[in-house]
Length: 112
Picture 1 (cartoon, one colour):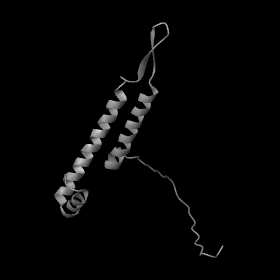
Picture 2 (tube, rainbow, N blue to C red):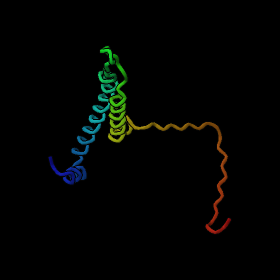
Picture 3 (tube, rainbow, N blue to C red):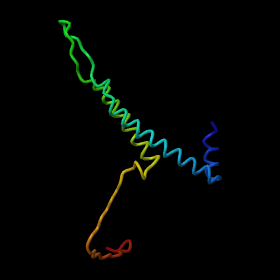
């Protein structure tokens, strides 16, 4: 693997490398999104079996496993939003209708 510095040099110098790099990053974000679904659907460790004094077994929530799964999902969501912000980033939508009546008063520093 070349040093990070070399990669950034190639990105600056080669248009085709930039395009391939961007596509690879988008695919990486898609892979992270797929992993999020896998983690969320995996309930295999959500409970653990405990044993009573009389030898009977019962299941309880495995809070450590659930918290770790939540952390894994959150980390992948964050990374995907940085790799492909248009696709996985927070969407901010602002809509305005009607007229806007604004008055702007410019005050010089020291004037009040």
